[in-house]
Length: 126
Ligand code: BTN
Image 1 (cartoon, rainbow, N blue to C red):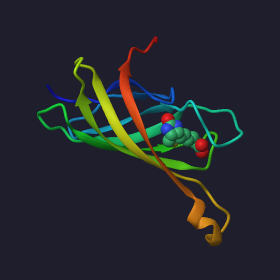
Image 2 (cartoon, helix red, strand yellow):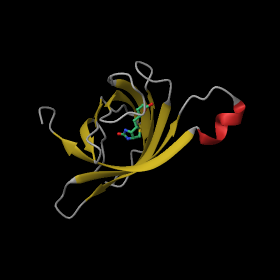
Image 3 (cartoon, rainbow, N blue to C red):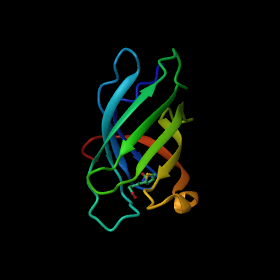
């Protein structure tokens, strides 16, 4: 069993992402539909770009970056690993860093948040 990130995924916050075709180098793009935001502006789907390992097992590691440019000046990066749970479901365990834009160097210390998200595969119409 091999991991292929292509398709729709949902995380524990209710965010969804669609990963488009993964190429033969493991590179991919997609769209991230976050369920939550630290901004006041209406949330919009945001482009992501990433890269995954193409190991011959179901435990590949990967990373991607999301540019929230249509409603926020922040940037997020996710790193993670695929797993298969005891019910044969694919699970992505991820950690993220969210970089917020601050006005000056003195505010740099508070500009990065971090967290953890778990994604499972979903059907596009769910
Ligand atoms: C922002 O708030 O400036 C942009 C949206 C950030 C959404 C974050 S990224 C990490 C976490 N996981 C999600 O699915 N959404 C939030």
